[in-house]
Image (cartoon, rainbow, N blue to C red):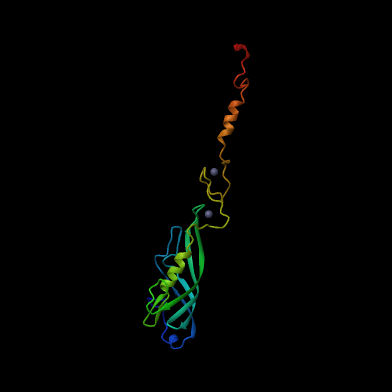
Length: 179
Ligand SMILES: [Zn+2]
Ligand SMILES: [Zn+2]
């Protein structure tokens, strides 16, 4: 693997429209992060794709696989997982990365495709596990580890009822000797 693991030379492929071949390319990319998770810069991503020669370009379809790490949004523990993103894109001469990717000198560079596909799918609010119980809002204990001693927060209205329940507190207008 050289410095451009995602560059595929497609000169031979393009000699015949309809020709297809399979490529598996692995490489690391930087800058793949969103607010809640990221692909480590030293973790290889996989592009497992079929390239097909079409009129005016090359179509690329398959799967991009990327490991990600982040912080659980409930308990703040490390969270991690693996993305599998289905891709189907077109490379054309003159492509600018909007509708189609550029095909330059009979080379398909899968890097921008991998980058764009993964960036869209990174989880913005990951969980360490689907049923994470999170942190206690009162004492901060990790409720996955052990239940803490905190009760549910006491409703302040219960305290007001206690005050009203004193003996002789009969309420307004109850004094007959005032006339
Ligand atoms: Zn968690
Ligand atoms: Zn607690």
